[in-house]
Length: 246
Image (cartoon, rainbow, N blue to C red; front, side):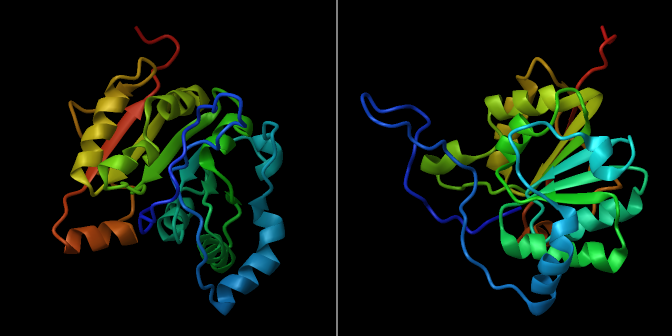
């Protein structure tokens, strides 16, 4: 999802000589936001059931959902409209949505309650740490990264989430045959995404460049806004080859 770019203090994952480690560079900025009464009620009533606490140990996904099935993780679901639509259309799949902003979590919980969605859980935490600590290797059917913050200014490009280390982490969590689906309405970021993804030895492009928009991906709020502004939209769909692929 797009956030309004708010330049935070620059940070570097390196350690100062003789000083404490600096915090890692984040791809998001935490900020306050107004929540409606419906979102607040959903957070209070449904949060204990559908919001998973962050933990530094791998999830047992069959225990989380009460079944063993294909699982898709979405990073930065915004207000959750597209997430709820996909989960509704694919009841045989389980979904984990990761979002750091409370208003978005409340909005998606409201959609979960209205739609009776039992195949969707939420984590309000840094997606990189969720992937690293909570998702076992070789387990995810897919990862969705739709319209992440493009961090327009050059000095903030290091905050873009699609970087080589992130892509390799995602690839390691995908099951053989699993996919990573990215979408953006910012062409320079699309070009960076394509370059980084194409350079990954663990992933394979499903198209010769950008992919056609899959029929199952809903049009998001940010996509609609971008199209009204005359932006293009670029989808990228990469897979982790099956173990027996040559």
